[in-house]
Image (tube, rainbow, N blue to C red; front, side, top):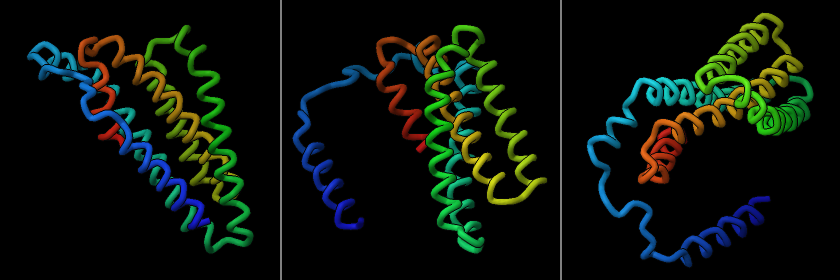
Length: 175
């Protein structure tokens, strides 16, 4: 597995080095109006909500891996958790566009945050590998839904001239 991963990353490195260096995403620095748009109430609230969702997702998987290490059949449950998490992401990618047609972006972020909180409380009260797996699925679903909503907020409120720079800035922050 390690050798395969090294080969994949080496191929990615070679591809990255071959990218043209003269491509300019945004030739000019953002003007004051563009910077102000990124600091609008909607963008800041959406970024904070999305940051919380992404942080929860990252923390959950580390916590799940270390907790399941001590459980009977821990590796099995961790595999099931990864599978359910992937299914949660697929479900979010399938359902979020329909949600977007019926609800505002801010409402979608609120629903994702409430789902995350409710499943976290249920998981803590029920405690067990099955609930941990369900929590992993719901966190991935909430994060996927939040991502669609956040991107819609940026497309609506961010300046069109520097939209690529805006997406890159927020994605880097979330990582």
